[in-house]
Image (cartoon, rainbow, N blue to C red; front, side, top):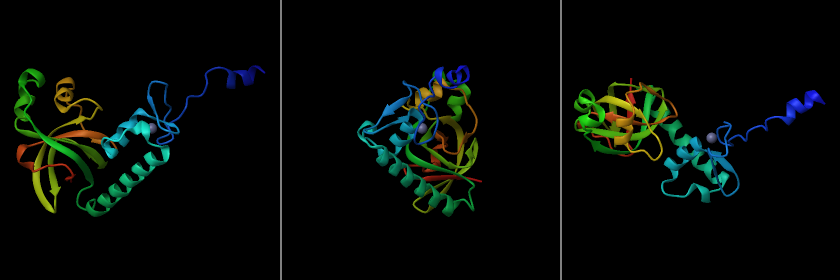
Length: 194
Ligand SMILES: [Zn+2]
């Protein structure tokens, strides 16, 4: 009795996310029409379904959106990984010029007239250095000035002023890549690094 009550009586096992398998707490999940998924997966799915309300989607629909995304990513890797082991898929891009009072003088200088590109690291990892922007078959060499992890609901300006540079971002992570101004980066472009 003692043995089993220790096994089953104490802490209830936490509910796990049906997408990624991670345990999820009451405050770190979102209810779908027929189940719940963790906040990390919500952020991932939200970037795939635009303005659709995730709470109004079924688990099946969420899984389908992710499967579609993974098929697209696999194709990208197949097409480009020979040349670029590190690949990033951009969702959107917009110009930035952060103020020295927000990010410090050195970083403000480095990020002057840059473009912030939000997207997902499809393979490998991204850190400061030379990258290639691939858009509509055209390749442009650019400099990756800084990376920052993407946080849902936080814009790039507050992300950059709240965080010091944190180093490389790895595969599967949503991130901001800050590129030098002449990169030609826009939504839908692919960024590769050797
Ligand atoms: Zn999850």
